[in-house]
Image (tube, rainbow, N blue to C red):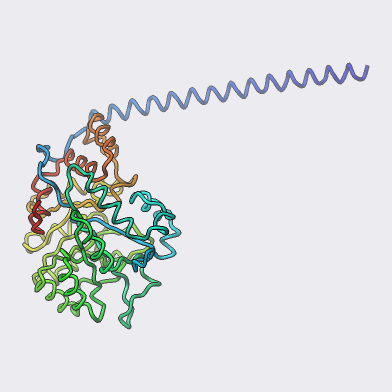
Length: 392
């Protein structure tokens, strides 16, 4: 009798649980249907808004530029493998960005450790050779922070790529060119500039916010005069810097560049000073306000299609004062990361354009196609070759 009662209780309990389960499933599916309807409504609204707000390219799209394009802003890096002299700070190496950068270069950490940092140059040259649009690139060295004794401060340096390494490796490839980097706080900065010029450097690169360089420092006047003497342009970052783990953005104020400009240095401001503010004013607006006063002031359009820089490329292309002053640059490897995609421009590109560009395998060809579709002119694509005297 006890067994019968228990069996009945078990059956009743199971039936009750089943009914509750069915109720829960019913509520669950009701929520799924509700969310699905909301999603469908949201998609329809986005499509309607896209049709209403679609504006197309920033400027009328020209026919594709037929000649090889010269990329005047391309990075390399290294961990010191193969006695390159490069290094990356522990902070950056442990940061999520490190793996992203390795993937963008098309290498793995074990590969670099086994074959040396030169493999990054090898991959760069190989991918450039495969490009149908870009024929060559300046590969940038990166000097570090210099302490009060005039020595490299490895504790405060985010990453370091010595001139000797870049000069040696770029000389091995016909499509790679040497871009030097010299911190003016070095006691032998002028001698380093002379060495760079004699070893084929086409420019000098600064990233003031992580190298702790104040371009307005009047003690740099001999350095600037040496740049003029050697006919070495200064490519310097301006605007906010978020590719590294720390930065002093006040040092990247374009207004601080008036001293080298007044002394006759040809200054190329990277990324048109996109993002960042100083004294309550957008850095790009501070740069634009200087363009007419300085015929030796230029800018590049590298990294200006990144998702964190909406509207800046449009502003640069439509600003008349930038006419004749913009140069094509890629900022590789950033163009080969999720930070850049044609899918970020649904109000400027058609679905067919976004699909076509996204399917382009070569990162330089993809970068050129995206910028071309947004209205970057042939003049901008041709400018670096003319500026640096590159003939194909």
